[in-house]
Length: 376
Image 1 (spheres, rainbow, N blue to C red):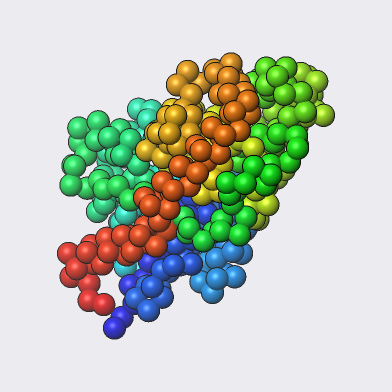
Image 2: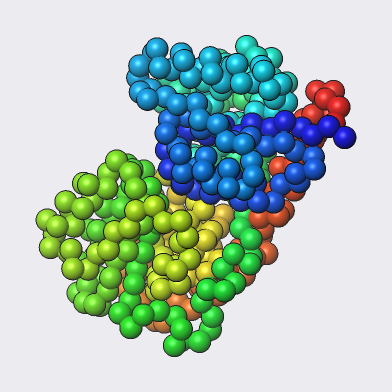
């Protein structure tokens, strides 16, 4: 039986949520039926390194400057030649930039199957992006959204066929947190001083400034609270300056990219996620898998993870005062915090399983291959 050649092409520059889900897919994919290659634009050496550690091929199509037409053209021809020479059957694209460039390359290379992954709710949001997405829509066989909200937003575009958009929720291995997740013993829930943390890339969408601005209000009630921010990105220096300006340096710890987030999650009292726009955040999946009570913005697919007051607390106004109020509520009521964490963990175990996600993706790839007459 011939293996299907699958290229997963990504644009990220670090190990964010999309990259983590790619790696977890590799850990579970049927290697007897798929030959998977992971490619990346820009300088995502950490991703490629992790891919190669797992015994898969990783390929960098470097773009030093996405505003340099010559650099973009070189990357385009690199992708085109790769697809053509390797006779790739399926290309699965992540990120708007990658999506457009990858679809054009696949069109010229006559790659049989093109799949677009929709992991954010802002895909094609401005006029220019929407125009490019519409022009290249006929070159896309399927859009895979990570949340019902993302699918609904895509279907607001009247030119898009409902048959071309499906939802496959991200998943997590229930055993991933087994050795470190919180249990029902209050003595093991957190350090003596409460820790409140967020994991996410530092950019305009993740809105870590909401956590910083909520901190003074939390500290009035719980003065020993430590705030943990994990990640890298363009806005990190601005956040560091904001923390210093507000005199909060003694209460904040900032970490860069962490290869294993579990030791940090195991110490948190409350997990906070202040993003302005989302698909289905991997960071929240991981926090809930640990049995952490989660306070999160009511945006994107987050309400598909968190039922307000049952498996976490949703902040609808996205104001720092509202985040502070929710954090204080949980720190003031440890029993409620533990219950929300326990219910959240049960929800993840039942409804967001990594193996189910992987098998669903494999089924979709096989169906598309059959429809295109590709023999395995």
